[in-house]
Image 1 (cartoon, rainbow, N blue to C red):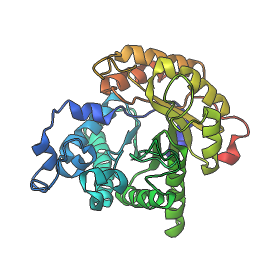
Image 2: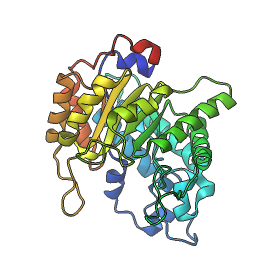
Image 3: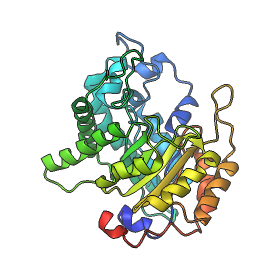
Image 4: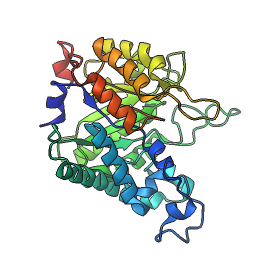
Length: 340
């Protein structure tokens, strides 16, 4: 069954935080390097996407934990896997390879999961190719003394995203997820790269999921857009879903999800953090607390896809699944057919 067909039937569950789960393994520099990169000239600890090459079994096991918890959609471990962000580790040349392997690992995790859990009531799960926001922004200057300066051009962003998209598609993803968007111009570069890639290979595009980030109580993205302006800026892409993730816990995200559910002509996704970070930068919200908020959204008819971002774990995803599995998904607006 295709993902859009399943979305008409029930609320789908996307997985939780990859970084949080990687941190549980307490990996050191030597673990990130593996045998292949043991003599790499610069430090590479923290390059979580590289683990697709050096610790693939860890990444696959994390995917399987989320599948076991009830996730219908698992995200590839590729949040920073484009050459702009990988330049921090002098690993630009690995972008394509990391994306291919990340997609293959996720595909294999799904295969192994359904072979092991034949009594699971699901028949399939989907791989979402995770495309993050980059570590450079197109709309804002990094130099306070030169507001017109940009560290990146639109064409450079498109080129980097194009390579990432190619890797994800070649690796076998089902959908492409542009997520944690704080600068819509970066997202537009990703959208353009996706459209260009599928034009170049003369094939129908994979579904696109888009998820933005409201950074604080102002209700705006980091680059200053209101939620309505953000949605208006990306709706031309005709995404499968639009949503919000990161920055906020579910309690703080609620009014923005309610607003988005009234704006969107496509499906709506939401995967908040496990509350707000504490003084140590860690997340304390218990799975039941997060799931309670998500259940309320579902009761109100706000969402079609729910899951977790920073601080969330398989326990959070399992609790969400239990709280929403018998609730109806948000119906598409009557005029929505032309947009999906």
